[in-house]
Image (cartoon, rainbow, N blue to C red; front, side, top):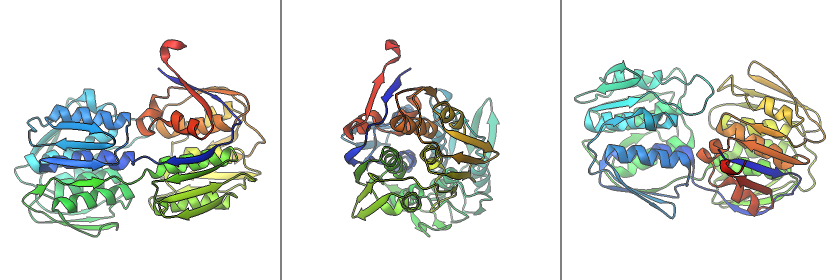
Length: 421
């Protein structure tokens, strides 16, 4: 397994183009199943999770070409409706093929999902919604087996606003008979991007971007092209990297509206932020980090996928701050590793209390999930001395060549392959 070696203390400066959004891409790709023909996904990031989804779609029979961030998916020859464990175990988003396969072909057999090794994230909301639409569902030998001659519209109210369940339900409903009403739907930008794609394909959906979606089923959809939204989590991660190193960077191919909660908190922490069309500039060259509390919440609130990075940032604040994660109570496995770097953090249930220190010191650290790994890289960039971050395959799932992007801004970070250490 690869690792990063980071010599900290380098100020990040320069311009960086943000990649397409991982979470949006992983919803758009299976949505292509709903129409026969070639769909084009523009601004697609080169990530391990994307390549995993490509392998899964190819297993189903799709013909795929991926070049220059343009992903072409030809679904006209899909003949397989089974998503095997060997593919699905690598990431939870694989379960997104469930709704499209069931909606278009009337059957699907999907392995229970895998992915990051934290948090109970059950898919019961997905299955309950599909049952209400008339699907027969059985769990057999670790697989979800579903059948429905024709799904029917239904009134669905989610107890919890779930991005995954909302996406799967929308994709199942667009070809169902009748009208589906989804209450407490997720409003995250990735869902809005999915709805935009489906509408272009010919779906009839009202309430885009709101908690209430009305979907009138149609007989068929057409393949189209769409541009994936910028990755708001990559953008936020890079902004915090600049802030922690007292740098000054400009991000391009970015939508500030998708990141407003993070930008407001960065300003509260003392950063200077300027926003122009498709650009965000952050200046932290004279930054004294103000302790700034955050509490994660569903969009448009502070994203849980930025919680670990913010915890690392606040470890250098001039005072005490708190980080509360209301989405996933147990998402603090990065804390013991940050403490190894010298951070002063105590966790009580879903709240981390962070007493800022004057400096962090390099050490060997490792993580078990994507965003926690990002927080360790950020801490290593700001730390005195050398930091080794192990198991960086987690980062490769969600950040496109992050070490190259950081190096272009002046970071001293190199990837070392497993064979070399």
